[in-house]
Image (cartoon, rainbow, N blue to C red):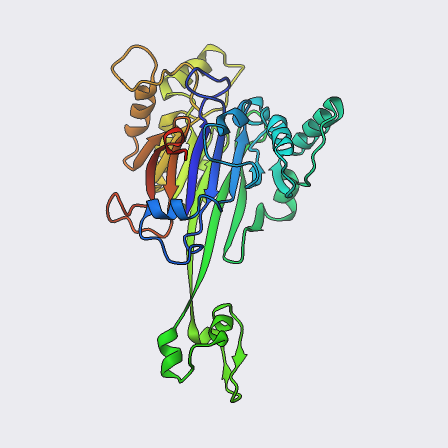
Amino acid sequence: MLQLTFLGTSAGVPTKHRNVTALAIECLNPYLAKSKPQSLASTIQHHKKARPWLLIDCGEGTQQQLLHTKLSLHQLAVICITHVHGDHCYGLPGLLASAAMSGRRAPLTLIAPKAIAKLLDAVTLTTELYFPFTIHFMAIEEVLSQQDGKVKISLDAQQQFEIDITLLSHRVPSHAFTITQTISHRTLNTAKLIADGIQASELWGKLQQGADVSTASGQQLRSEDYVDNEKQRTRVVIAGDNDNPNLLTDTVKNADLLVHEATYTAEVLARIQAKNPEFDPMHSSAQQVGEFAQKSDITNLILTHFSARYQSFDNPQSATPNMGHIRQDAQNVYQGNLWLAVDFAQYMVNGAAEKIDEINSRIQYLGSARDNKK
């Protein structure tokens, strides 16, 4: 289960209601509790003290946005930067400095373009910044060439996730990060053990942990004969700036959710391109993303990274550019589940859920992190 918190949803510059780009993804393991939670609310409550998270992009002011959430820099496991434009990375030095000042000592993985390493080197040199924790820097260029665009990270014995990187189309090299969380849960078949005459003992625990054991009488017991290994997979695709959603055709297969920029409506984008043919902003319109999502059978789509020209209210009949125009631009061509991200909006993505009704659907809107902060 992955919980998304949008920390910034504006494109280029912040507005009074939107900060520049940043997205937190918390990795929840529903099996960490002694007993399986019976509801989404109880799952969140059980794991609020043990929830590692990833940060996708870190625009200026991201650390200030974090203060309005329950997210802790001590539990931040990985930072991914899609590209080098300032609205996606200017907040990184300050956030790392705050992590240092808060007493963080645990290593941190940073996956980003090579140029980001130069940025951090310049900041640390000119401001005498010191990090009391190790930063494992992974250059996207090297990951794409040497590791087929894949990074595997283990959070605990049960929970692993894989990050796949896809090159996109923008004015500078930009990328999408696909986060695939896999949770393994071993369930001991106690009924079979008892039926085979194996009474409860410490051997049961060893079998559940995956070890083959021998009884006092010399009987050999194989873990795989008495343990059911259930796996849950949740997969989300988070795209950086991109003017060609079709580059994600293979990436979005079997994804539970796509998060993609929709900087403009199709009409405004065409007007910008016609006004200055020598400069293409190389962003997507909501219509472009909607068309791609429709033909790719993407069930769940969240749009973000909106131009500051669009006001926060939703009224497609208004002459003032607003979110209603963005929504209509996408809904004219897309019939799936659509959300327009706002700062602090939270969504739960559960790849194991069946799409039966709203309660059991794969995506649930949880409200605002400001309201959910405990």
